[in-house]
Amino acid sequence: MTFLTFEEAVLWIENSHRFGDKLDLKRMEIACEMLGHPEKSFRSIHVAGTNGKGSTANYLKNILHEAGYKVGIYTSPYVVKFNERIGIDMDYISDDDVVVYANQLKELWDEVYQTHQEAITFFEILTLMCFIYFRDKAVEFGVIEVGLGGLLDATNVIIPEVSVITNISFDHMKQLGNTLDSIAYNKLGIVKHGVPLVTSVEQEELKPQFIQTCEQRNAEIYFSDITKVTDISLGETTKFRYLGQRYELMLPGLHQIKNAVLSIDAIEVFADRLGIVISHKAIFDGLRKTTWPGRLEIFHHNIILDGAHNIGGITTLRDAMSSLYPNKKIKCLFCMMKDKDHYHSIHVLDDIVSEFCFTEIDYPRRADAEELFNESTHPLKRIEKDFRKAFSEMSQLKDDEVLLITGSLYFISEARKLLVQE
Image (cartoon, rainbow, N blue to C red; front, side, top):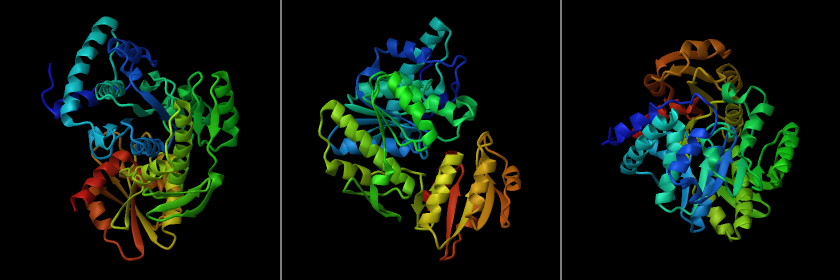
C-alpha cells in the first residue's frame, strides 16, 4: 500500500494505535536502529513539563534561528494544521514531504511488525518522521518537545545537550500518576547522565526530588529565578527586564515571562556547553518574533483563544485574564474533553467570568455540554450545543466586554477557523 495524497498519509498516521501494548522505548529503539539512528544526526534541546512546553520550545527555536543556525522544532498537538508538529526555521514540513516520509515509515512499520510483533504507535510514527526529516534536511539543532510525561515518551531516545522542564501540574494522571511526585518522577525521566537540566519548577516540595535526580545522573541543575525580573508591563505586548536586559514578547501574560526567562537561561547553558556565542540581539529578536496560535491569542482586541485544558493551565489563564482585562466583563465559551478535570477547571473560571456558555464539538472525547453546565455554579450560564451558533451569539460584544474561548486545544482549533474565515 502506497500513500498518494497528504490526506491518505495523515489518515494512516492518525488511525495508528495511540498507545502500545508495552509501555517502554523498545519499539523506538528498534526503529531508530533500523533507520540508522537519525536522532543522533543533530544536537538537541529536550523540553518537558505540564504547561508552557510549546511556547518555550518556540522561543528556543526562534532564538537559535535568529543566531543564524538551521533549527528544527517538534511540538504537539497542532491547532491549525497537522504540519505544525514538525518545522525547520520558519516553515512547517510540506504536504509532499509528509507523504514521502509516511511511505517510508509504513514500510518500516510493516517490517517491525513482521519481525518483532510490535506495532509502532501514532506518536512514535510522528517522532520518527521528525528525526528522519531533520537528518535529511541537515538541521544543526533540534528543539524536541515531549509528547506526554518524559520517561517513556517516544522522544526520550535522544541524548540532548540540555534538558528543560517548564513546570509540574496535574494532567494525564491516568498515565503519569495522581500525585505531583509521580508526575515529576515521569518528567525527570528525560534527565540524562551528564546533561544539564534547566527548570522553572516552583514548588519548594519538589525541588529536593529534582536535585537528587540530577545528582544521581551527574547532571548540573539550574533553577530559573523569576524574582530577577523587573519593570514588567503586561498588555497585548509584554515587556520586562531580566538581569538588566530589556525584552519584549508578542505572547501576553505573566506566565509567558516565566517561559521566556526559562528559554534565556536554557540558551545560556546550551551555548556555554557547545562553546558558541548567542548575542543579546538574537535572544531579544527570537523572543519578540515568537507567536503561538491558540495560546492567549487575541483577535480584534476583544476575543481571546486559549487552549488551556488542565488545572494548571486554567489557573494560569485566569490570572492572565484578570491582569490583562481588569476593567472588562469576561464572557466565556467553554468546551473540554471528558477525560480532563473539567469540574475544577470550571470552578476556577466561575470566579472571573461574567457569563458562561457551554458547548460541544464533533469529537469523540469531548464532554457533554449538559455535564459541564451542571458542574458550574455560575448564576449566568447556558448551553448551546452548536458551537458555531454559540460563537456567533457570544461574539456580539459591548465596549466593556471580551470573549474568552477555552477548555481544549481541539475546541479552539475549530473556533479559530471561524475567526480566521472572517
